[in-house]
Image 1 (cartoon, rainbow, N blue to C red):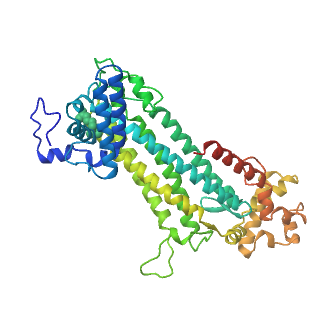
Image 2: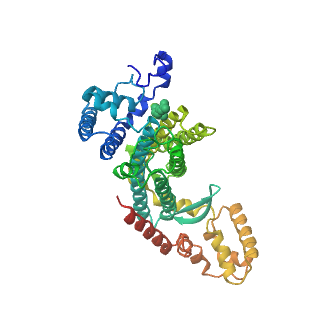
Image 3: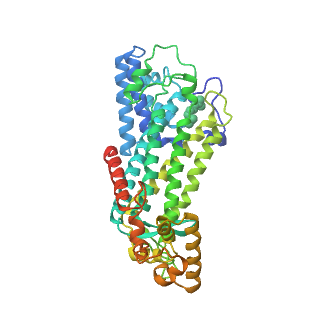
Length: 461
Ligand code: ARG
């Protein structure tokens, strides 16, 4: 294909260099955005009188037919074109002749690619946002089911204090709600139009940048043309937001992997989201959760790649920036795929309440409550802590739980102990008594459920 930019140079680039330079095999994803941007640009050119109405109508017709034919499969994107922008323009000119050659007036590929990527990522960002909302809803529903299920809460992966399954799951809702906030925040800065920045310095034509921006659904225009073609902050912001989403999914995956092991058996994943082993017939492996955990590394890598590409780039456009796309496409595709499998995996996950309860019965997770029992009856907390520490040590030696120690024995440790201690250290009581806001008590968990439900109501798409 003859180079459109053959001018000063012959355009005869070596095959190796041409392939190396070409981006069409990944930027062809943006054909729709490219055509949409060109349609608005052409409309503006004719409105301000840079091209005639007839030329605009020809261009609009031509672009619409190119779009239609790509969508229907009639037109295959020719990968020998350098990039999607060149391909669309060449195809347009092939179809409508000279009018097509006017499309690129008062525009450069530098602002064109900046525009296309913003339009593309705006859509992807909203798609990820929608998936996040669905996941929050699925987790919230699971939490609602698990309001009465008592399980051990952990610190250092050691049993620490009793909590409800609902309380634990709601922690993930809070994380993912912050992720939605980060996407919304990134969108504010993404949603301004770079088109009209041209190569870097603007143009001598009487363009109307605001008109194009409004037509494409932007909140405004980028105020500096050099920044307009150089800025990829929104890519970094989105990748950082995606990296955090992945980190949250990865932590959740790790727990699901642990919980579905024989050692825990707190949940059972639906067969549809597990695999078997080719040699061990008894196996049921949580591959989806493992893959999500594994793919987190890719998204972190995409963020690092983009930051590193941008570091040290002089203003304005440099070809290095072509590297932005593969990274951010990979990041968004990975996040989307992970969320798509995570949502039904959570929705079909079965909590095994009895196993959770049995695990909570072991490990002295009511020891804090036993210390609180003494404290509330006058003993200073540190003294109570010491006394209970001794009781726990003796129980471990005797192979007993705190509930199994008779009152007469308790009295040897402290005169304060009375009959009512057993009620106070029952696991249900331990949970019920944690009435502080945000805590694991039933009222608090209901408040948290309401908080998430409210968020979902306000953010329903
Ligand atoms: N394929 C290029 C990219 O993705 C388009 C912009 C090319 N601009 C240029 N001056 N060579 O960045």
